[in-house]
Length: 512
Image (cartoon, one colour):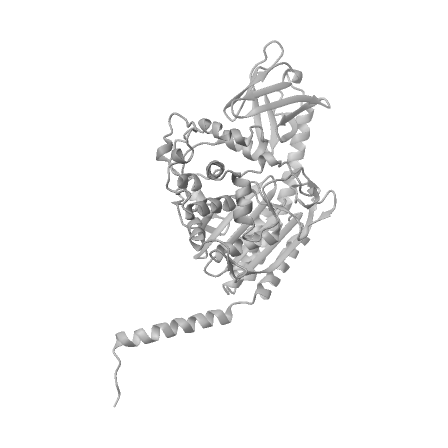
């Protein structure tokens, strides 16, 4: 006699079995780490052979361990210094993941709350008249929804170091409302987050992160400073020349500009560990070094992107921001990431927490920025078992290689433009521009004569100051690889009384 099982009961029995079988099947076809590492290594070597970047560092982590780590090229081409496992790579804005997690730890320990008003966390700080600090939360600053322009703090923090960090709270009064209600990425929120940490921890945010974040994670070669480090270990920015060769540029960071939003140096080893401890909910080397709740809090979505331009980066979808992390997806799979760039350098750090795979990729110039994303996507495609993984990566690499010719032509054009500006005969005597100029919150920018031309110095930044046209009224300076234009007022008694830079008026001080 046949006994018929009710459909509902049958499903209750079969579904768990099917799920288990599916899981076993997925595990059985998952490529071995050595397979993924080999493919990424091969692509990286081809990229270096094509001279797409002067230096490249890559690490892959899977299932709680580093399965691949290798440095390529030279961190200083001019001096012939090779990239090694001891190389210190500049993180730029990847630093936000460290600062954001430091804040999440304080929240998990009940020292503060992410929904606390910034007014209560920074008592005594003066805000612009149009800003209500009691209506803005710490979370707003972590998620870039504070709706404030931040030029004064960011210029000193990231570039010039002209205003000491102890005085940054006084610059908050210059952070004017942006006039929009969008999520707009900037450094300001993470500079403010450091001010909050400083109020909570007497040792300051740098020592706090070193003791409470880097050390527990076994990150012994991660630094928020430049002083005391062997300069030969630091990967430097490089400029692609018209000849196709690379030229080493100055690493212009100082201790004063190694800030909480973009100011760390670290080895591949340490960055790989950072992906592991974050994707494994605070566990590394078999130990729970961070509270699980703190890690989950840091990766919890605070605010969604409101602009289409923010919802996609390279091959990756972005939903919004957590405490220091971009939260999104790759091919539908949840992805946590934080990228950064400064001058010609680029950092890529990402992981897929459900699949327990992460990628670190660091470059120093050329077309390396796009290369980091190609390498990460290849690792993720291979781990997911996508049959088109290698072909897709090959196609992307070929397209990137085709851009090298255009990049060389662009470099030649920039060189030609610079040379033409150096030869310009201007209507006004450049000696009338020489002097020191200052603006509230921005410090002193000095112009001097050097070898018959103008030279500027603005804190840690310095270099030629070249006329934009024959009038001599518009002068261009390069700050960390980006051009800025000084618009001078007409001369009075043979001297320019002031210039305007990005809407800020700098007035002459003293005599040339």
